[in-house]
Length: 316
Image (cartoon, rainbow, N blue to C red; front, top):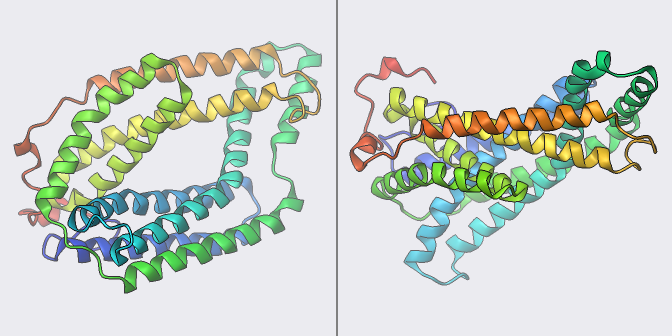
């Protein structure tokens, strides 16, 4: 087995442990090479992948934590305590990397939108736009502090990995996992539709997190039923990316409104209009994707936990 996958031939908790350990090792390797990357594109990609790995691991922890609570109910139990420590380490590492990620994504999104509107604006607005783009770029003087941040994040991830390796995980069953997958899939479409109707960016962002957790769990069980699980994971990944894109545009719009960020200059109106138009397109696409997510019955998840009868159909 390779990648973030479970092995149906092993006890579920041991297979989960191996998958989480491999993911955390992968994230640490990506953070180790971050200081050697100067170009913004590779740097942003390395940070993005490291954060994605930690989020996959965090998506698994609730499966174990809730089982622990049902078995004992005492928050002082060792198996509950170490899961809280792992969660805190992963959350802290993600928080450390979020500043670098937000800046790199903001710069890339701004450059993309600027290319669309550059020919539509007058010379004065074009000069203001170029000034804003320059302020949004990474300053090489920040790279040293980013290196220290990456080192600290890697230390936290290694600590979380060591906890997962050494601790005794609670026993969980495939029936519980199948039930959680079915419930999560059947609820996600309705929740995202409700979040879209509310018009609240924070609610939609919370929905994006739910999509990310479900995507990670579908990736885990994909070897059991590659054809169906890959199709479901692809669809929920599209929803996840669209909400993430909408979130990035909302954060860019908020950043442009603060004139301290833009050097005291006003962002061109055409740039703000482009952001609003792009967000409108994204939300229309989101509604179309959600309509393609019908509720699934118990039998649609029956292959989860069973070895794939056609192993050559799955290429990790």
